[in-house]
Length: 187
Image (cartoon, rainbow, N blue to C red):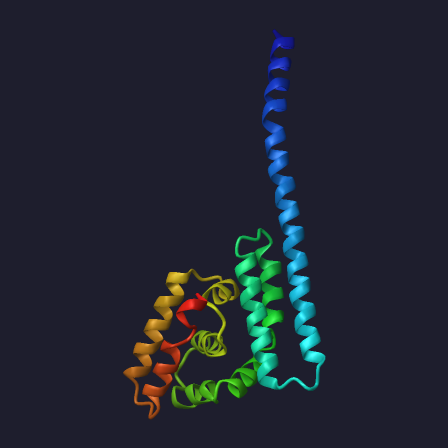
């Protein structure tokens, strides 16, 4: 009986283990490909950053585009925390102060205007506004914040409602800028 059970366990293991090993090897290959893609995008951003002839706006746009592209490619990565840090660095938003200055320079001063006219805004809402004003896609914002897409849509909607119900002199302009970002085709 003991030999029969040993043979049965061996037979089950031989039948079940190979498909799992195959799936794990495929995941490892996928992760290797994803890492190569991130490295390519990081190199692309570095090259653009080194080119002193590039304007600040072009560098900003290139960083945002690279972050959005990488986010779309890596949404299902099992190494999400590591990936989230790399996306933050790639987009240039890992240094909060420099990020906000860059967004302000490239988005017509909208972030400074919002902070000035709406001083009661929580830091999380300012961060969300900076991502939206910068042009990050919802997928990228989702990866950076860890929030669901529906939660991001709700937060954006509540933020717009709060702005419109405030006494801010430029509330219509701020709300309009938030409504149009990111563009529908960049979700």
